[in-house]
Length: 569
Image 1: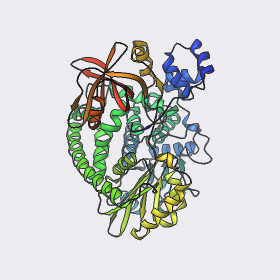
Image 2: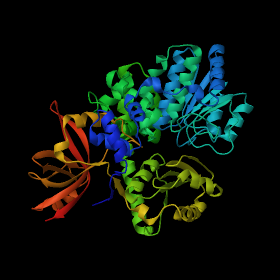
Image 3: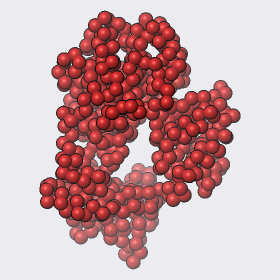
């Protein structure tokens, strides 16, 4: 076993029995819902409904009235509006939504995405200075801006108004913008706090359309971009985000816009049903690659083009730059892993702080995530260049990395982010101190048992329970993502059936048999465990997820192995 298995909680049996008589849902799926706190008929029905009409009124968000009034004035007076966004997928989709929508509403609009290597993350003075040359009078920041106190003051001095659309954690002091749209503001009564940056931009568009008196569905045609940005930003896929992503995926699967069509084509996803997993692991890396290697402007042009051939040309560039990114990513990961193995005491270090000269800043966020997964610890990865350290941090467990940076801000030049992901700038001489202090902070929050990787199991099933009714209700749980992960099932006392093989260089391919039912299974990167499974007269307990595979026009179900244990008889 790789993980410590956390068995499902069956303390809600009374609620389950009551709901089972009310709802026609497969009992295993219903148990999963009840364990995930969907514990009454109304909540379960709303969960499955995913109706666009259940989106919250954008005017529940503080400052929405002010923001939409200022934007309408800019549109009517022909003011130059600049959309200022971040260079990740969330920022790129947010920019694309407002840039395209305002242009089609007759606005004089352009966009600005900072260069990761020149201006750096977020709203910067350098970025604003380049915008001023365009004779702009209104800036709308998307997926950034909530901590840009000095920068927004600078814009104000230049007679430029700012509307901030952000979802990152605000500090105690807020910028002096005309309006701030952020569901996480302390005084915000907005019902859902977990919108992505593109989700906040969409709410602004919703509010604008409502105030202009246009049809609601004008805004809905951008749900495809909202779905991509929201899924890519790994925010909670519950409540409003679930509705946005579900309806956005439907839009992509039915009528993808030219740029998305080209991206699906170039990445091998065309004519396959797109889901959150494909966005996160296939589309998002390609859209992110240009922001990491060159310029994220290409991604905006791809998402906004009406010309399929132009989309194909840009998609080809994204493919090339993603290949380059993966190569840099792998080298950086191996170098960082070597530092961990040679220099860090994993028995005592709860947070990894790793720094090296001249790492490519475009991939350190990805590598930090990979290190966190490998060592099951929050990770801060820092690249030092020209006397400055630029870092990306990733966290899980019980540790709020943004809050930690707030407490250690005296060691940092600047920082921003949220509980699970943050960026920072630091002087190299403060890195050792940061390492020491952040590990002191974590000592009371991350216990030794927290660092043992855990696998939460959702339900125990036997293979003969996998009937059509079960799979139909399992599909209804999608879209899957944080706070609504794809269920992990456990089946005990399996036997292997037929030969066990290695697919590619390190993937395990096996058939499991139980009660006369045989099911294909694959274990990605499980090739090293083939000898454990190849022993006669053993039974296997397997934790896995279920997924559909398509081959030669046929759809089959397979188990994707998460972990297993061999029981010697």
